[in-house]
Image 1 (cartoon, rainbow, N blue to C red):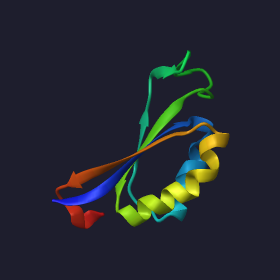
Image 2: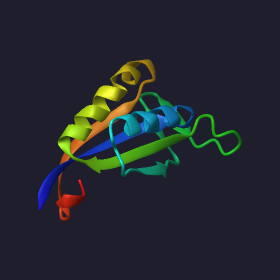
Image 3: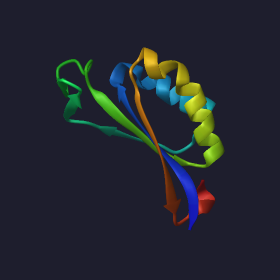
Length: 100
């Protein structure tokens, strides 16, 4: 077992390209994009918009080494407040640590 970081970002679909570009810049080579059905953000509820997709939110998730996690967070920092991103970081144990 080895330790790695898991980063999850809840991102509006129109901003997804900027998040994946930041991941590329940070050297992130493995991630998954998961669709969401809906949720609540404070008092506001949101749901998937099957007509235009404009209000859809995607969960970007990745497991990576600490240095790449730091680089990704640094690349995304300008977007955190301006685009109200929800970014979480966890320390996880992985079985095949050589992949990260």
